[in-house]
Amino acid sequence: SERGLGTPATRAAIIEGLIYEQYVHRNQRELVPSAKAFTLIALLNGLSIPELTKPELTGDWEFKLRQMQRGQLARDQFMAEIRALTERIVGQTKAYEHDTIPGDFGKLQTPCPKCGGEVHENYKKFQCQKCDWNMWKTILGRAFEIEEVETLLREKQVGPLQGFRSKQGFPFAAVMKLSPEGEAKFDFGNDQKDEENAAPVDFTGKEPLGQCPKCKDGRVFENGMNYVCERATGADRKCDFKTGAIILQQPIEKAQIVKLLAEGKTDLLKGFVSKKTGRKFEAFLKFDGNKVSFEFAPREKKFPAKGAKKGDATPAVKLDFTGQEPLGKCPKCKGNVFEGPESYLCERSQLDAKKCTFKTGKVVLQQPVDREQVKKLLAKGKTDLLTQFISKAGKPFPAHLKLAERGKVEFEFPER
Image (tube, rainbow, N blue to C red; front, top):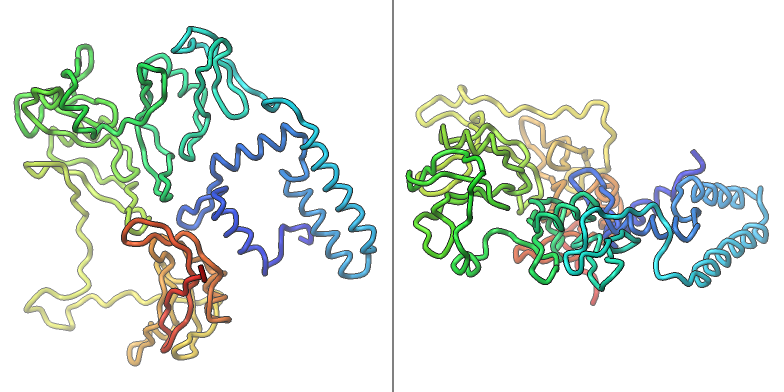
């Protein structure tokens, strides 16, 4: 279509800009809009500026650009229309004098924790109408639903909730608790100082999930971010058994804890996400006599056992690139480079003899590297500036990927 957004040359930069400004997050091969993006859309709709929220209107301007390139639209007419649009948007924004913007906002049924007044939702906050109590609608990249805030105000805690992002960009889960002052705070269930000073948790009326596998005397209950032994709470605790309700972004259901306590192992869970690579993996949870740990499903052996004949080994399955579009020429042997399951590699890597060793990952230090960037790397020797690399110290950094001698892929850092 001639009414698309951007051009092949600019589209990748547009996406990288949205990621850098945290309007979208990369999740493997998908782009997920952030709470910040939805907040911006709400603002623009409230200001009655649809031109900046609707792709089809932006596509119309792209179409007019192409008409001008072909001589079908006068440059003066195009610039006059752009000028009029810009003046209208700026003028409308400057003229807006209210503290918030109109929208389909709700009213909470649960009263204010500070004064008992009515709590209303607005553009940015949940705000009491009688006092200064308020709570941000978005906290560390996660937008709160009205039902979640109702639960927080009514029960003084809600969660565990997923979808938060740390300042380093890592996703995490947490329980939100309401302090005695009415402030919403994170509770990760691992504050040892608070645990030492806290009274034992009263589990009266709660259903036990099974017998504690460590002390054998207590029962295990759900408690916020964790499943804990009843004898592992309070200052005078006599057991330390505890396991998370969410582990590496994988929610652990009560039924799995019941199975873990009864049989020593859960079912195979498939939603764990590695902190190191950002990739999903599957594993069982098992109790090893001291703590809950991972147990991985057995993999097919690629090499023969010791003493077996070489010919008995199962050969690695070769990749078939038939029908795929090559991304460019291999910098080592001039063969074609294709996308594989986990990396981009030369077609000659599949030969039986004199294999080419060129390969670069689809994820490098948690930074997804898409096909367009690999095409640039092979054609121009360097990608665009990528901003989501995570160092071994856990800090994000920007860099280009570039081709070095003998086809090796290295970092090139921007000037400071």
